[in-house]
Structures are given as C-alpha cells and as structure tokens.
Image (cartoon, rainbow, N blue to C red; front, side, top):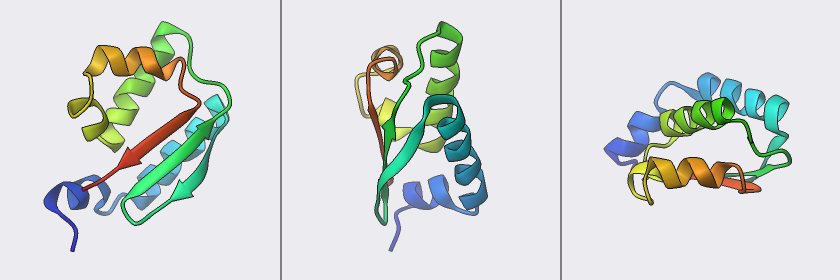
Length: 93
C-alpha cells in the first residue's frame, strides 16, 4: 500500500511525469536507467549549467519529488549539485 506522500506525488499524473521526462530528455539528454515501484533514476548527458536552467530544474525536481530537497541538504545545495550530477534519482515513500 502506498503512503500518503507517494499517492500525492504520483496520483493521476503519469502523463505529467511523462511530459517532464520528455522535456528533460530534450533539454539535458536525461534518460531513464532504472524504474522501480517507488523510484526512478535518470542518466543525464548534459546537466543544466545556466542559472535560469538551474532554477527551473530545481523547481521541476521539487514538483516531482519534494523529498529530494526537503530531506536533503536544502535547496541551495541541491541546485548546485544539479550542474554536476550525471544521474538524478527520485523516490516516493
């Protein structure tokens, strides 16, 4: 059974997540390399570099999986990491 957080993050939004993934693939060469029941990992060929890209992607990641930011080192550290990471991981619990 899914937790409330998982249901909130994924309820009725498969098409929305697919659209975001398509956009990330076009902009950053991000492709799925692992998909689980409650997790997703993408390989990123061209991580965002420009400040406006980083701000936008941070917002998009937060919309898809707030725990990445809220349970991590915070928005500033996450934003900085986006320009260096070649893999993006998401999980819902």
